[in-house]
Length: 197
Image 1 (cartoon, rainbow, N blue to C red):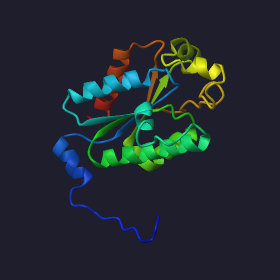
Image 2: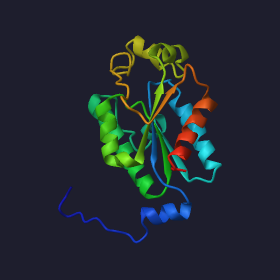
Image 3: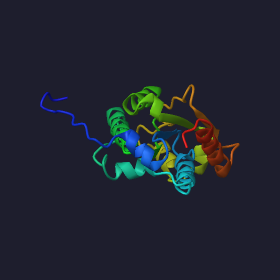
C-alpha cells in the first residue's frame, strides 16, 4: 500500500447498517466443479433470503468475468487474481451490511484460504457443492467439458487443472443425492441455527 493512502473512517459503520437491516452481513461462498449446481443453488438461496426481507447480492463467475475481471484469463496467476478481486468486493458488500452470495469454482484450498483471509474467516461460510466430475461432465450445461476434452480450453478444472475439495466446509451438499430445494432448505436451516438470519 502506498504511504500516501490514508484510510478514512466514516461515521456509518457496518454494525449500524446491520442494525438497520435487522440481520448480520456475511458471505456464502459456494465452491465446486463447473456444472456442480453452485449457481442454481446459490440463486435459489438468494431468492429465499430476499423474500425473508434480507438484503442480498449475488456474485457469479461469468457475470464477474464480463465486468470487473474482464481482462483476466485462466492462467494460475489470473485465476488467483480473479478470486482476490472477488474477495475484496465481497468484503465491501459485507461492510455495506449485505448478505453476499458468491458462486465460484475456486479450485484450490490455498485460493479459498486467501478469500477467507481477505473477507475474514468469521464472515465467510464455505459451502461445498459436491458433485462428481463424471456427473458434471454428463450435465455439461455450457459445453465446456467437451471443449476441454478436445483441447480447446486449457487449464480447465477437473480436466487439466486440479480441484482440491474443502476439508471442513461449514455446509456440504451432495447434489447427486439432494434435490435443489432440499439443498436450499439445508442452507437456510444452518443460517437460522447459527443465528445468522
